[in-house]
Length: 408
Image (tube, rainbow, N blue to C red; front, side, top):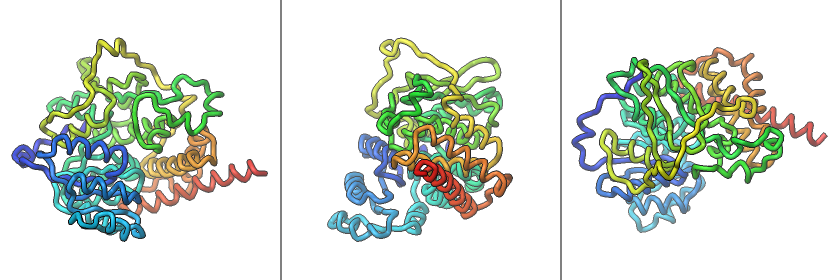
């Protein structure tokens, strides 16, 4: 069991912390900006990035007083420069510029780029010796062993932004890390928690995007609906806390009040509770090891009334079992799982496949990849990206096959 890293005295002494936000226009990035604006005197923003949203990126760069804005799409550089005209904020574009920006000396890089595209800049920050507040699941799902090994070699901290992993980080007693019996992540159950399987077969995109508790981007909202999100979080927890699959559990908790808990060997359970608001774990990461005031909803347990828990239904939500299988199979499988899932979710959001097809496509992709890739290690970022591309190719082929059958 991996204990929280010791506190660096430099973090205690620094009056103002410099922060770079990768994925500044997404749901997590927007929440990061809100926390920083609430505590403006405590932070300075060096870099903000986005994939292609020029106007939104320029707006957040101006609002936060960033020094540099980077757009991943190089064809949008002129538009970004125009949007930043007169601000004094530098502009850059392209994947090389993203990696260079991630290496700039700051106290903390917030890695909130969605998908495998976030792996390269996050790893660049790690190798530059910069602490990373990690909101990108794919860094650990695609290349968790590589990523954590590089972080350990660099002597930096990976601070988990996901509410569930942040809950575990807060509940983990450094002096009792070896006394942990199990780690439990909670899941809301998503919009289809009580839907029968037959109704789920007819679920629309709008149905799947109606999350009962959290306000998130479309990809992660669909992952929550399939419960793949929780499967990816199990894989993340394995890498973040060095805990094997058998000691990682999931419980469905519809109220989304308890975000995660640790059971210790004496039977004690330590949990973290809070409102369903991403600004809470974000504020914890930005300020760690200190805590600062943030205007977030306060949890009223009397108003909540009761907290309920139930085991996940693995028949209706097979994605959770697929993620567990991938974790136990090795890094090649978690990489393929993630790549195939991204493709399948995009296909569902594009109206090509049905909701229940998402998990089926992932299962088919894992089966197809096992023969040629099974047992493969991921020793470099290039190897991770090559495998990711192969997983996407396999998934697209599986989707194409289904579409041809449907047309025929």
